[in-house]
Every structure is written in structure tokens, then in C-alpha cells.
Image (tube, rainbow over all chains, first blue to last red; front, side):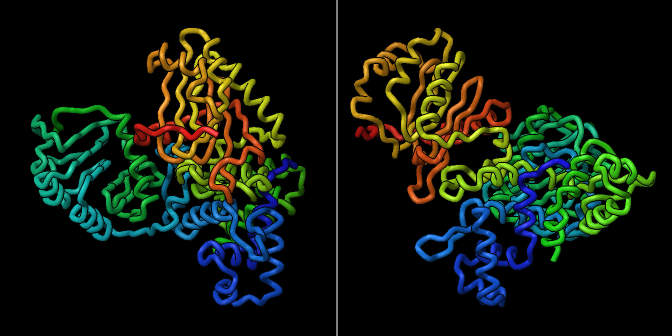
Length: 259
Length: 262
């Protein structure tokens, strides 16, 4: 049997008491709050602290227990993985295949996200994000939603930078308002609006300075814009920005779309 | 509690091994049991636990495969491995000065070896610099003057790029050290480039052969030099360290600042 050095770590933190103490330490930072939040008795808390101390997840300094750097990071990472597990309805039916390993390692970026489903809840979220932006909008679309046509047009007029990435597989019916409003089928150059095309797109994303909306591809490797992961904390926005940049750098500028 | 279910699924060597096996290919129960040298009955308990925690799924042809959740979870394992192996070091050191997106990827340092002995680590660090033939890039809060003598012995294509922090402390005589003055005077910025940026609480360097890294002491808020040094020679650790160096290198330069000599 192979040896996994981290198996002992999971063995300790899988214990309900140990996990609760560590989780509440991370959230509240002191023992008296842990007693209150967990309703554990003193003996159980002390037993847990001893187990956690052995693995350097907590440390005693001048008779006071503190969370170590390692303890904090372990909890952050665990919280990120737990997000996937808690939203397994979504993640079991979607794929991370387009996402690089270095981005997937940063799963804690998802810790404060939520999932939404339904075409209109997801679309309305795009519109709100675009309307509330004060700096930039970056989008990756297989099928750009017409609902964004007016908000994006207004934002460009007000000086907000826009970047849109399409794929060779992107579908654009000629009645799409977005095509008309942004003049995607004309070779007009607007310094605030950049567009590129890359080989293939399945995962779609909308990122602004105030939030991000990520739509992973389905298990059948098709775009799904009816279900999304959304968040507005800095880590998730940064993650989505890095994903956008990763795909953007695979693309090339083009003059106009043929619809 | 879903968190606990997931952690329970992972807190077992046989289950971790099953997950690793399924990374390479979908397998039937009999194949897994044979590989693990356990009975089908014993295997079933583990398989059930992994299915309940949504880590594996059964395919239409009766094999087992990793779920998307398991695939992403397994990518996090080097992170846990690195921290587990070095937990004593990280009881006194932390990630001060490491941006969050790199802390999340600390698993890329899993192949690094930590040298705990202070004098030995200085010797290894010297060899690390001497063995560089193409370049030495780094960020540091401390630096020996003799490194500039080493630089002068390198051939004409060798590149040096180093960022100091406003907290960097160097030995007395550093600014007037002849070898350093010669480097500044003689070489173009393509060959010899230094800058002072904001506070740097860590030490990190790469050459074409390897990486070297010291984390900050939690109490001091910067390196202590006595806890241990991480040395790596694999591509992942070099790339991780390169990104850390680039993070500091891209910070605004603090002009007109003189480093503190002691």
C-alpha cells in the first residue's frame, strides 16, 4: 500500500470536534467564541486542540492557543473543496476541462461563491454586473446574450473598457442585438473595445471589477449558460480574470464577425 | 456535514490509492481489488464511501471513474502533502509576503528538499549560485557581498536580476564593495539589473538549474535564516519561484532609497 503523508492530516480534521474547533478558530480567532459557537465542553475542546497542535495546525503561545499559518491555509483549501461538494448537483454535471491545473489548484477562490440556475437569473446577473462596473468588462461567449447589448453599448459610450473573446465555434445569429449594438460585423475600431477569437470555447465567463460569473461546460462538453457560479470577492474575481487572460492569450484579433 | 463526509473519504490510504489509480483509467472492482491486494468485500466498503461522498461514479460499462469533484480534489493533494511534510517548519513560519494565488499553489514545491541545518544551507546556497551558468534571478531581504565576485567570473551572457526590499539589511561596505561597483558600472541592464521595491519578507532565487526559498518567520515578519531553506530542482518549483520573483519585480521601484548597512 502506498503511503500518503497527508492522510494523517485528513484523519485528524475529519473528526467532527477537531474540524469544528479549527473552523471556528479560523472564523473567530479565540477560544471563548469557539465554546459559544460549537457548544462543545472544555474537555472536548482541549482534546481537539492537542490533536491539532501535533500537526502544527494550532500552536500554544504564552498559554494562549493561536491558529498557525498552516492551519489557516488548510482550512481555506478545505473550504474551497467543500464548496464543490456542497454544490455537487452543479459540479458533477459540469467539467473543468478547459481550466489549467495552476488555476484549479486555486480552488479556495470559490469558497465564498454561490451557484445560480435558470436562464433569466443568470442573464440578469450579467446585466447587473455590467451596469455596476466602473472599470472594465471582460467576457468569453460561445453565444453572446442579446440581453447584454444595451448595457455593454452604454458602458463603452461612458468610457468603460470591454474585451470579448469568441471561439471558432461561437454562434451568432444575424438578428442578435449584440452584433448590431457593438457593430461586431463591421470593421470599425474602437480603442475601448477589443475583440479576439480563439479555436474553441466551452466555458463562458463575465468578469467586471465588482463581480464574476463563471459558466463551466457541461459533462457533454457543451456550453451551459443556464447554470453558473457567481461571486464578488476579490479572490474569485482575480481567478476569473486569470482564466480570461489564459484564454485571451490563445486568441487573435479580428476585424469583423461573419454572421 | 458534507465537509466531514468528504474529509472522511480522503482520510484512508486505500481510498486515496483508489482515487490515484482512477486518475489514469476507469477500472472495474476486480481490477482495483487485485491492485490493492484486498478482497472484493473489503473493497466494497471503500467504494461505497467514495460513491457516497461523490468522489467516484459508475460508468455504463460497469467501471468506476473519478467525478469532476474528485479530479479537482486530487489536484489539491500536493498542497496538503507539502504542508504535512513540513508542518514543523510552518509552525514557526508562515506565508507572509506570498500572494494568495501562489499560496494556493504551494503544492508545486512538493519536490523541494528542506535543509534545516543553518551552516549547511549557506553552503548549499553558495553552490546554488556557483552552479548557475545562464542566469540568477531573485528577491531578497539579505545578500552576501561575495556574490558579486561570483558574478564577475560568469561568462558574458550571464544575467543577474535582483530586487531588494526597503527592509533589506546588508553588511557594512556593501555599497562600496569593489565587485559590486564594477558590475553596476560595466554592465548593461540586460546583464545586471537591480531595483528596490516595497518590503520583501522572503528570500527567493532561481537559476536555470533550480530554486531556493526561505519563508518569513511568523513573529519577525521576515526570514530568520535559521529555520531552514527549501531547495528545488524540478520545473514546477522553478516556475512557482519565478512567478513569486515576477510578483515583486513588477512592484513600483522605490527611487532614491538607500539600503541599510549594518
